Length: 224
Image (cartoon, rainbow, N blue to C red; front, side, top):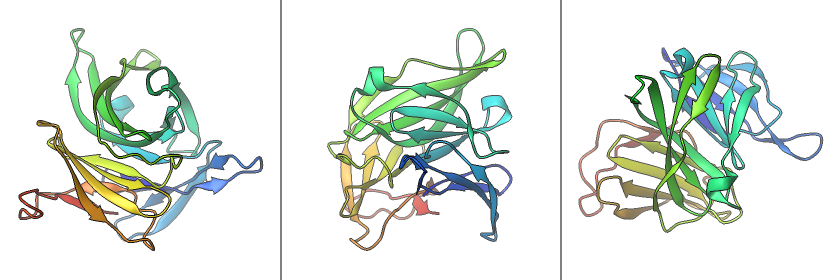
């Protein structure tokens, strides 16, 4: 399961299923404020995490799949195209994606920047923009390593950010750990786990900060 909040109170959720050739595929649904599911359609690939980019082609859903980031067609459930990140992440797989803000480049193009997390714990930043009929990306820049990995498990994880912290729910195959990264200092904290029977933990979304806990760490997150 992957999930992201979209525009005007609509969220998107995607299943993770085995296709006819045993490859991972997804069925995309819209989720209303009342948690009503409406099926959109099935994709040829499996979406392992998703995020809403508000300025990319008037709003787009991006999703991770293996070593790819795909543009999700929210009208059909399939994907319109994908970028291969293997030249940056090597044999790792992308396990999380989160919109982190927008900024104009020197040519005044507006880019939506995302944070990416790979299965070896590396955190990357990359920008996406539309130019003519094409959607382009910047070269990914490595920020840091969390010191936590999902090993061979490249699904059932999720990330979110409030601009100050990155939060990651990491499925190890036995349990899901919640890890926080201070994007300013680079400090990493393990905030605990959800227990062996609670998985997957996906669709992380940030809300206003709660009172500080766990030795001064603020934990502004909620789960969908």
